[in-house]
Image 1 (tube, rainbow, N blue to C red):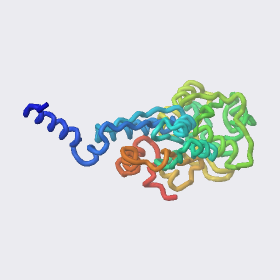
Image 2: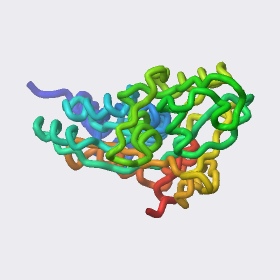
Image 3: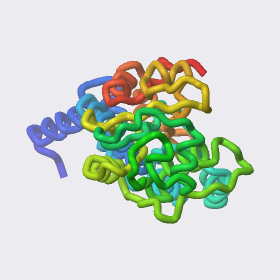
Length: 294
């Protein structure tokens, strides 16, 4: 059947519009969708990145959800996510499980973070060593008086076990970086599902102590200065003390893909590592990797 001339013109214009996409990269990934899931530490940063990137590339839709590093990595292992966010490194057994499913995880360091120790502003304690923190969270110390504070019980707050921050804190603080150390969180430690949960509890409870990514800590809570050991200087977490490695509780933040990324996912990760995206890292209180020299 012969197409009327005006219909042919409309069809041609429609095809041209679909192929244009405002030029450059925009036309490469028409209707691209990226599923991004995992670390609650990274979720606000990932949302800010996604919002900025989608404004520049309206043909790309990015879904960002939290749930913890373990949740994101499990989704990657099962092939249900494009990018997994993690505040800890993927474990050997998770890599093997992924490979058993035909997936080869590829790691990207996308920012750095300091873990801040937080207490109520009325708590007179200003500084603690890593050993004191280990003794608090293991249950050896149960009263603030034992670390120079008032005669009050210590209420321990932690993230839940599927959190990468929980795993990092266990390995770095409770076990002091010793792989042979088997110290565990005290049984009465209150496990909370989110960074916001820890912040809200510390805000309401003068006896509480918690930990959170520096980018999440509001101005109305007190941040404790931490020393590597007794006699060492007490250091507050900030970009400069992460970069010079003087703050002892700092870590890399990660994104993982199933194999080397291609198409829209590759373009998005390249943008995340750009100066523009790393400026957003600094704005949200994290440490840009472009300013970090290992």
